[in-house]
Image 1 (tube, rainbow, N blue to C red):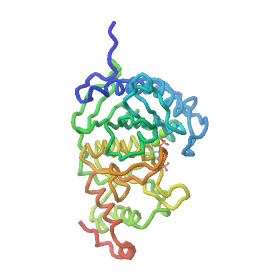
Image 2: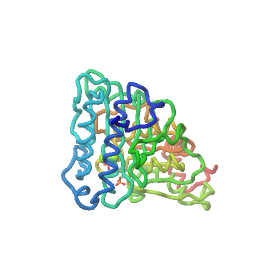
Image 3: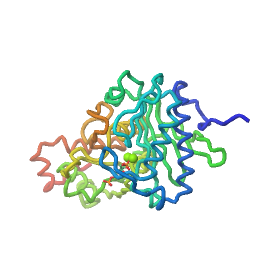
Image 4: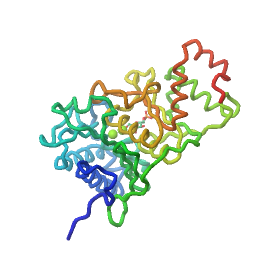
Length: 335
Ligand SMILES: O=P(O)(O)OC[C@H]1O[C@](O)(COP(=O)(O)O)[C@@H](O)[C@@H]1O
Ligand SMILES: [Mg+2]
Ligand SMILES: [Mg+2]
């Protein structure tokens, strides 16, 4: 009997990357199955240790990391950089590609049955493992995520638009459902962890204050707020419905550059978003023009529809005294 490809529709995937993408999706389909069986609050969500970034590791984080590393070793991948590993691992010395991965994003949501996912970024491999990843993010040749939600989906770009695939529960194959995803521009929704308000810098506070002031404030329109605490889920909402996501740096120790990691979270999400017509910055500068200084480096992250992301940057462009003045003169940003 002929075995089916994990991805049914391969036409948007460069031929050289098809073994790698099939490997990712094979593990993605298995993980989807594991997650559906659970128990989420028991074995899969159990705390088992701590990773290099100081985050608690849950059993599913480790299980996912091991499954991807094992399967990618025969998928033309030379270098494997994972959130759950201290340093870059050489999988196949002859492999042509370097793959960075957040094997399980949204770990804090495992036991509460909220959408979680896997985020990945692909570069051409260089001779040196670290150098394969610590380079401008616009050198990515692929990037995307698998979301494990009510439906399991793959959202990916290879630099020619963003495509969306749905895992068909009957055939167990990822089937192309959208050839050219576009970030809608109409939504009036922002996503930020508002419990950190007191730690934010003035431009971020001013931006959020103006959203919250709604039709009584300078924006003269009401905004809604969402915070799932799963980057994949926030990304999926934004590519489906629009809006803006912010995880800025703040004054807490260790959060000077926010929480999210450049190599295996922000770079691939920025690639997906830009290819879908949106924008992604570190609150001021384009993420895809930046390089991570080290593997687990964090960066402030703002992404979504271009008008909103540009507005956040504009609040940062003002001299300090004008940002101060914003607190008393909200008319400055009236649209
Ligand atoms: O708990 P906070 O500070 O709101 O952070 C939530 C963010 O942390 C993350 O869970 C970090 O990812 P991991 O779960 O892979 O560590 C993001 O998915 C999410 O956007
Ligand atoms: Mg993550
Ligand atoms: Mg993770």
